[in-house]
Image (cartoon, rainbow, N blue to C red; front, side, top):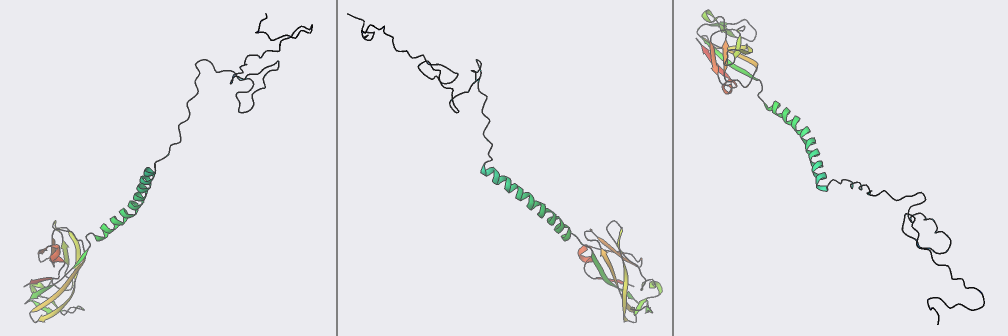
Amino acid sequence: MHDRSQPDQPDHGVPYTPPPTQDPPQTHGGPPQAHGGPYPPPPPGPGHGPGPGWSAPPHGWTAPPLPPPPHRVPRRSRRITIGLAVLVVILAIVVPVAVWAARSSGPKDFTITGTIDVHDSVKSSARLGFACEGSGGFSNIGPASPVLVKDETGTVIAVGEMTGSRSISSKLCELSFTADDVPAGRNYYLVEIARRGELTYTEGEAREPLSLSIG
């Protein structure tokens, strides 16, 4: 009988030498690599684990967190941003135009025109463009008579002048007057000729030709 765990040994009178056994796998900080024989394993190459000088991380070490992915603006948000930018540009153009239009369409100055008839006390006039003028108690009604326009507070807002006259009859002289640059938007307009008293008109009435009479 013999031990079957041992291979048969040839009997040639030479001592038997068992074959070399494989070394246990060696650990070099990376995945274990098995090798056998008396030669050391080859160093790990690129992409196959850490190189020389590498040591295992200390106990409790954790890898740093990965950076967050790049922020991407949703397509809808981009559309809203572009729409707001376009709206701002439109407002920057439209608002000044609207303000200018409002100012242009606001109240404007106008001109008051009219005539004043002088009865009874009249005479011929030597002034060019005037056929007649007042006389006697109305001698101050003629080519040089002042024409004043006031607002409801009594403030003079325009000054006019007599522009001509015509003789209707021997006892009736019609004189014309005008006042330019009368501000619009007042509640009332008071017209006074030759300091003979004031007559009150609304703006609508003042924009129409006035007809006054004295004597």
